[in-house]
Length: 318
Ligand SMILES: Nc1ncnc2c1ncn2[C@@H]1O[C@H](COP(=O)(O)OP(=O)(O)OP(=O)(O)O)[C@@H](O)[C@H]1O
Ligand SMILES: [Mg+2]
Image (cartoon, rainbow, N blue to C red; front, side, top):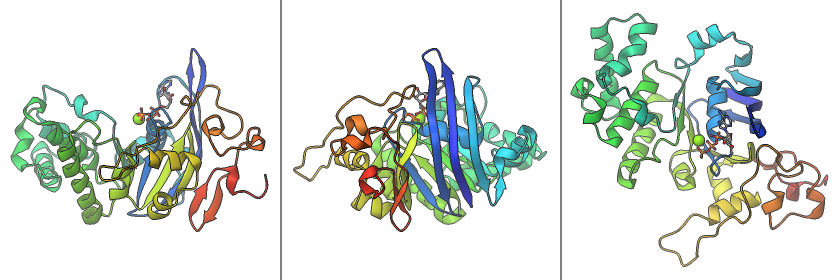
């Protein structure tokens, strides 16, 4: 249903060109939830921006194909994309959005605004719809009358989620929706997302650095490293049998309460996205790399059905 192929998003900076998203491809079927994980700065938020075509001014390169039910969104004029796709078919809960609510407007109105402006629905009817939405996301309907400062963090996040849902999109991108919340509130938001998935048949791209949250919500997982997807597959296959040395390290770095094992950390420095390593990008930090992996970038190899790994260890064509 949604297919990204070879998406690139590069930024211009004083240091040079940052290759934040560099050939990212993945598919999301209807109603499916894909978790996107990877360490800070690997290009997760940039992937979300590329999907929503919300690009900063310093974009150097933006290309690739985004197919939504067979239509290539990259061919749409900005005006059409804005009117038909952004927020209507595909919506995003931005990283840190909780803190961007307008402090002087009641939250109900802030959620209702797109209905009033884009859909020409009158204010009273729009607020009625928002009350229903508040009910759906677990907020008392009368909270539409509150100002942001009258809400807790978890409640604000529910408001932000209802904002993304207000035009009834098929695809919801959630960029670190729980990272600013304490664990008990985080669990409540995760339960809300699970419920939304069931009740609303909505596809989700769930972005997080917390691999444990992905296993709770998603059917599929994509692991990003240095602007690229290095492993992609069904959640059980990837978590129980991770193939990419980076995924293996990432999983081993999760602290476990009941196990003796000490969490590992990933050696070496985070990758430089201005001058990424020319062969396998993980090569400088990889303990399994062989000299011949240094020169050429590995392809994405299907190691078992629907499970892909970008690593020379799994190729016969070294
Ligand atoms: N507007 C911009 N201009 C220049 N560089 C940028 C811009 N936005 C992001 N970057 C850089 O692009 C890279 C990818 O950033 P991005 O925010 O997509 O990563 P991320 O995986 O979401 O990280 P985090 O987990 O910290 O949110 C980083 O090196 C970041 O510094
Ligand atoms: Mg981010």
